[in-house]
Image (cartoon, rainbow, N blue to C red; front, side, top):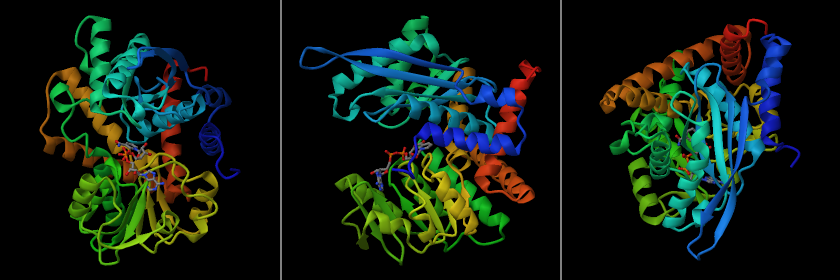
Length: 415
Ligand code: NAD
């Protein structure tokens, strides 16, 4: 496990390396290397069998410097305080990279939520929400869905929060169902935003995106939408995978066929094409590799064998720092998670704006505004990476850390 260090250690290491590069004053460095607040609370849940079980809930608010904290809620047995802290720090940088006026937050409930019955799920989400309510709010901290939580969970949490403050407040949470104050275009935003980034990268390189071969690890929300939009831009998807299997076809995979097959059978295996091993998939010869599943899948072990020319990270933290260095030395550009998957948080920001204004936009307007933000952010990161001769990840962190640092200094000039 030496190549898979603790997630919080990875987040801190990345932060300190870049803080050094941008010459961040020591006080600011100390301030930003701990979350502003971490809330840990007990969450009692009445099980269907008639007894009450108590689970641990966590909410880390890494930074409020640029606005309310923003980030998802993960309901999973593997959630830990360190993981939640790291993810909240990454959210601070992500919001700053795309310049949305939010800080970073993340939360979780340590439980096997997937195994709960529908009634237990609702009771757990509502119990979690009642304990979370005093520390969140539309101007304080705005949670969103993450692993094992979705629009339904967000609706329960918004409902509990409404009871807590005494009036409906849809702006307390994003990722809600459209009929309950959600934004049109949120479901596709992460994969779509990634495709806009990749499209801009090819434009800046003066190369066509048409005909480029794409490998996608993970065929859930982010992976499916990235595949759909990239293929609509002319790219060819040659391999997809999910937790159960991976498929490869040099002629190209029909994305609509794959989405249909996955929704009917629950897996990608069995689709036209060759079945390959998970490990082989990451090492396929291709132009663009999109990890859209888990953390730490590109390590120092497989980084020397990766044959993609470009990696666009839909997942959070799929590349370990050691692997990052190897890829950079090999001339492989990595569009980092904090930029490539920031379409999700960008449209969450749009949802919050619409909730605050009580004025809802057409889906096309969401796509157009998302595209503009993703393209501008891609250009900024690209330009800085070239000027400073650093990786895209380093450039994105430099932009973000400087932006957050300046925001802190406005209120604390002594830093
Ligand atoms: P999801 O649960 O919808 O999909 C995940 C997919 O990965 C599933 O198809 C699953 O079967 C597959 N998978 C799991 N283990 C795998 C393995 N070992 N090999 C191949 N595939 C595997 O989740 P999602 O919302 O698409 O999120 C995926 C990643 O993107 C996560 O890291 C998430 O944090 C990140 N992300 C998602 C969003 C969003 O808006 N959905 C936003 C930002 C970041």
